[in-house]
Length: 613
Image (cartoon, rainbow, N blue to C red):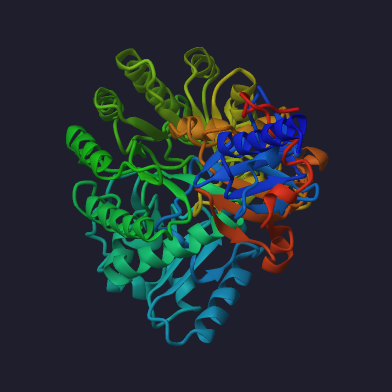
């Protein structure tokens, strides 16, 4: 062999070795897809490479070939869409499935139909010691029902039938007796959390604003079993919807009103279970869990101290406590959320469960120890109190990300303060549209003028630079509505996506764009969870939380977003869900001889491993 040939062979060999040594070999590659990154600097790509639990490449189908190794799993997406895993910033997915069990009466049209459904369910389940159901609203029933009416359907066993928000419950006489609910039973917070009573003061069977939790806890609560079953069921459901991360704004158990007792115990019970799952590698969702303050007798500093202890105990990439939750009020539909003006036809404007000075103390003390606070706000006066506290927290820590959650009613003046101070907002779109006859209720209790000026202003905030997230708030909406694409459809249409005949409400609103709605379930939600440097977009160095979709959300009509199939969900580089396993796995193949693949050598870019076309 002459010198020239030897030189060429040596140069070729050196080039090949150099290419192999300088380029990381991927464990998993997705290629030939429509990759929407939610990264403004590189919105679209064709391929993504993953090593371990991190993304190591985002770019063209040609350039990704340099990351192919002998054991690389290559996924030919064949034009399917790849996106960042979806993020819910408000779903109670850890322990709330118990609230939505039993007979589902959402679709009933009237009281007679509801009672018929409950009776048939009770007769079909003779071994259940407690009959449970969910889904009524006052408009459906034509007014509040009574225990005696429910007795006709369930005469001999306790029955708890929850409304479609789970805030209120309808109990029969057997349930009232089993829990010893009598004329002498005090209301937790009169006018906010209370038993509806007759003229003599006797409970009629309706419990307002989770007044029923204590009764349920005495009769039916089994924390170790119910928390485990709930988390397994709801996390699996969320993963099937493309969810990879979520914020749990309070672990919903019957003990949440006992802030320094039952709430703390149930919170640690649930978190210790999730920690076991994390250690075993079976935790399906990246979880940010919040202790909840929903008490008229709690101690703000003691609550913050508990949150700080939980923050130190649970601080991994998959399971963390970085925030607290305040639930300071009842709900608007029940006429208990605080407003500046009276409810129509009444002499009352609602009242606080957690007083504004307590909210201020919690939010500012939390800011001093680096914790954010998510504040449930239904009424415009409660939104105002939350805004006051958040602005004070920002003066302590400019990066404080305490947020309004729901922000159902916000006065025009406070809307501008949200924009000026860039106060983050989480919204549940189905709380401000026609779901559960919300349009009728809101107009009835607040009037068209306030509905048009102040209800559900989250699209306005997003258009004006506020970080807005959207989510379902399961179980206050049914688990079937948890899907982030379902929520995005609601936000992009202002319609209840569960009802094909729904109309937009409020009528004078401009909805979110699809792009804004997608950001609200990816990068903007990640920012609210303080995870924007880890997830929420597809970028080199971020964690491999991804979702594969049958269709591109930007190529379907906004009213079809919920119908897009989730083909696979990946969290931390591991699949947590696959739709039709055989079909999805047909896209996958192992590459044995990567050097023989055409284009591998051409894909090497010496000195620039991030080169993209």
